[in-house]
Amino acid sequence: MQGDAYLKCIDPHCGLEYPIKSTNVECEKGHLLDVKYKNKPSDSLKEVFYQRRNSQGNIFNESGVWRFRELLNFCQIDTENIEECSKYLVSLDGAEGRQSKPYQMSKAAEFIGISNDKLWLQPEGYNPSGSFKDNGMASAVTHAKMVGAKKIVCASTGNTSASAGMFAANEGMHCDVYIPSGQIAPGKLSQAYQFGAQIIEVDGNFDDALKQSLNDAKNYNGYTVNSVNPFRIEGQKTIPYRALEYLKWESPDWIVYPGGALGNTSSCGKTLMELHQWGWIKKIPRIAVINSEGASTLSDLYNGKFEGEELRWNKGNANTELITRYYDHLDKEGIRPKTKATAIQIGRPANILKGLRALEFTNGVVTTVSDSEMLDGMSVVGLNGFDCEMASGASVVGIKKLINEEIIKKDDVVVGILTGRQKDAMLPVEYHSNPKNKFAIPPKN
Ligand SMILES: [Zn+2]
Image (cartoon, rainbow, N blue to C red; front, top):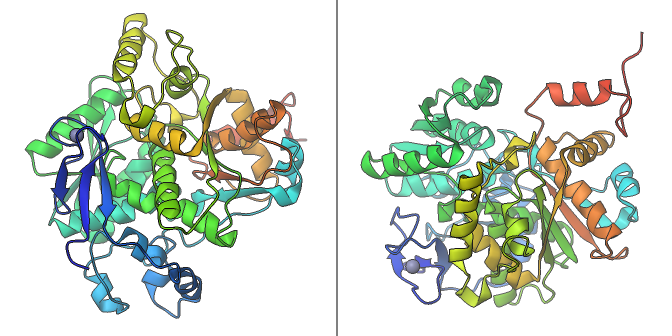
């Protein structure tokens, strides 16, 4: 299997290729990269993946990421031997992705207005660091180890730093976390501190912090683990793998994500492109991306709300100048992304082009929801006995909105991804203390 995996620029007019041990996050012309595989995995692996759920003490079978290792085999290993695997694969003792699978949640279904057997919600908050990021961090840190990196680097406001810090501590690596100075509530970084990460404050906003972290990584031997890293995208492919596996590899009609940096949208799109190309699925689910009203870059551009042009991947001919003009417009008007759902408070989604490619392949849609709607979505998930953060509420109310608009049909099968666990302890307290909120159960005395 040696030589099977490589990196390739996503721009079809460029298509530059790099060896798998490259740590570039973009080609020399500045385009994003994909991890590519030359082999076509046999669909008899479906049975292998199912058997591994009875893991018999093998952490790489227990892991909800590495159980599917043949489908993200950039290490190019061909072994079932656990000691051999552990030389390459990085895992939090098999815990990443282990508890994440789609569940039926009747109160959420009732609120949305869909029958209970058509709606699946998949809580990724039950990952060790509390969010979906552990899926992609397992694979990114595996690549970091493969290239001998001693330090991983990220810009983050919460979930990414928690995940990076946890994996780094577990692997005995250093971890630098870049944050916009004065803009992050210290509580959001408590996990990064707990895992011994070095916090670095940058003057400016998140985009400035990301830019400096990328520069410093390049200049001072750091390994970037933000979602511009194509190996992050590989691990996040296992989110839809698990959903599909539990649905017996029968495609749902829709897969719905909150939209932030668009790493999840990108990885879901890559998953579906690959599975379709390999003949594992025939029907291609449509992706719906739910932006916050206060951070709606993708929705504005995709739905033609800026300059009247609907931005599309257009087979690799996306109008990137439109994106540049949109960002210039944000700067000129002083418009900053603003939502209490900080996990998706992103104005310049780093993976926008891969996201557009995913939307084009799946005939996807993009919409927005308000902060108060997201809080209702978050709260109704809680009434089913599941924890989730505010941004995850976007999936629930986004599905509701798209059903009301008859874009999602009532008998469609829908999978919504709940991206993370609650990290802001006061949000549910404030929500339930206000009797005007739809699902509030205010305290009594
Ligand atoms: Zn390129």
